[in-house]
Image (tube, rainbow, N blue to C red):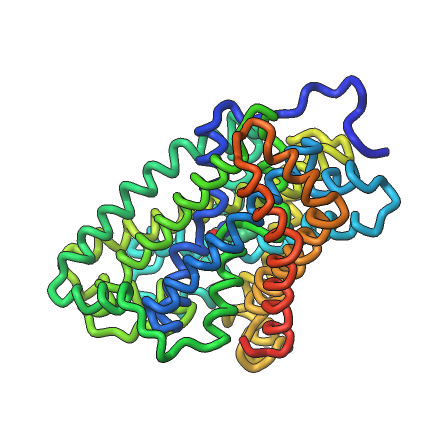
Amino acid sequence: QSGPPLDAPAREQWGSRLGFILAAAGSAIGLGNIWRFPYLAGEGGGGAFVLVYLFCILGIGMPYLFAELSLGRNSQRNPVGAIEAIVGKRSAWLIVGGFCVLAGFIILSYYSVIAGWAVGYAVKDIIAPGMGFEAFVASPTLVITLLAAFLGVTLLVVLGGVEQGIERWSKILLPVLLVLILLVIFRSVTLEGAGEGISFYLMPDFSGLTTEIIIAALGQAFFTLSLGMGAMITYGSYLSKKENIATSGIYVVVFNTVIALMAGFMIFPAIFAMGVDPATGPALVFVVLPEVFSQMPLGGLVGVTFFILLSIAALTSSISLLEVVVSYFVDERSWSRKKSVLIIGGITFLMAIPSALSQGAVPSLSAGGIFGPETGFLGFMDYYVGSLGLALGAFFLSIFIGWVWGADEAAQEMMQGSNMSAQVLSVWMFVIRYIIPLVVLVIIIGYITGTL
Ligand code: PHE
């Protein structure tokens, strides 16, 4: 049996346009903006990476975001249901929907581990004063307790439902996030020597630009906009037919981009002012920044603020990951929201344990163990699901939307509630059908041939 029973209560919807925009922006804004984007920019040479990234967001990410939102709103169902509404129960395309749900599970599991570190770092002076990052993430009690705490809060929000949970908390948390970011930026750019960081960040130097960097920027565009695994299909499914998908989508993209750019303004001036190398990779935020904070005036306070804001950003994303899975069980299996949240939350917690233990606590799960010399279980999941997986998801979903459902049908859905011109629409249809599958294929080939 699938689809809601005939006597089911009306499906939930967003309470307001602003509520949707903030919830979707909350999904987009996360570890991707504040942890991943700065270290990629640091490794990719600063300004040049930023420019390529902006291009990928506007040219590829944004049009594809409209497509996912339209697919979700069309059927008002989860990713599997949305595909089924178009091709029926027996189609192999349902596998793509199933992949979305599975990816939601998996990404949520390791994402919550990293978010747990952020929570721990916010209260580090109390729970583990003076402890280095390596020892911190290798402590099984610390990481598992923090994971449980973070996941627990995620469950509580999603338990509240679309409007009373996700929307309400996004409306509170996003403004708080913004204020905290502004505080940290203010401290960072007023440090002596901050100017050098700002010019590294803003002055593009294309001499170091490589294919790897371009591919990383493209992958980041998908990750940061929560694309390729149905989060935006799911959030789109709670949109009313009166809502203007393109306008709301543009707001989401703008918010997300502004926050990523602001993250750079928090981090690079401070890093350069303290004479630290920006190209330190994933450790940038957890290893380098605390070091930087410890050396600067008011650093203790800034550090706590920074990790609180990182935790908040991660929370508004993790709720969207959980909601993808919950919406599937609510729509397709007729489970109650409460039952779905509790069962899925429990399984996610169990699945997250190997990731949590993969940073030194259990050697065979960590780097140098069964997943290779450089990655542990967490890195393995992030690579195969969070990077390659999202690209594959976006590839199949864009083919599905552009060719199976049809770009013209998708455009019709997007047009409801909007007054887009015919020219803009035809450009969009072209991008969905040709450009996006092609570009994503390049990313996939890039990943597979190991240029990354
Ligand atoms: N966009 C989120 C971030 O930048 C991550 C995410 C990916 C969330 C996919 C949902 C789906 O942190």
